[in-house]
Image (cartoon, rainbow, N blue to C red):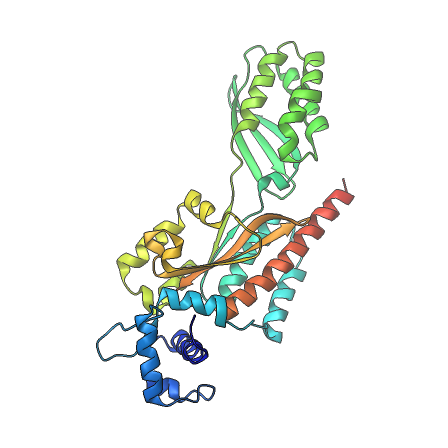
Length: 347
């Protein structure tokens, strides 16, 4: 464990480096009003902190910078809670008072305001689609035996599924099918569709359609497809403004990474509730070795359904970003709760 003096010096170095982005020398730290030690004493402690792995010296005779281990100790032990100022609180609350019709719009705008407030890149994993409900089902014929099934969800999302129509199904049969599906599946959670399909819907199909088995197979194939997790990005070009990412090849690799949807979903998928901070190599992806990712989960009805996150350099304003994410996730959870309660009251 670090001594109290070492902790104070490490905290000052991290704060100075985050603010200025330049290696920090002992004389600079000695001028901090809260440190109160001589330059020689600080220099000796910095040498010890480097030997212990908390600091690095990028150039000979230069000052020190925090290592990933130093940042981790800072985040876990030295960081002070960041209280948002009135301007930040007003900006977030004003955003949440704006009327938004769809969940997708709420989440996309969350990504936008996060990147705007932090000047980093925001990444938001939308709510699990299984939290949403079917609003309407339509079929648009493409040919004699092909059609597009349009599944409209209550969060405003629309899924298009290509289906093959059984050859012995007439136009009137399709109309009857649409009525049955909308009667039995409308306002049903996506997670319960398959069960209802093989219960009440199957019974109605058998009563009304001669080729009900072929139709049931078609519906099975239509609903068994994966429901896509949605990723929303904000401020992708913000990464270009960071001095750590002036290398074109490094930036390109990182931007290419952000476009890999499945990988980003796996990184953001909530493994535990609340705030999570991954620093440098803790991200386990080479392209993110010089990045930190801070995430916060948000909830619907007390259940974790998605994640909001900030990606930036390891020299990140951890206190401020965590404060903003914490406040933002609470407000987004409240907004989504209200949205789904209102939806339930009107159905």
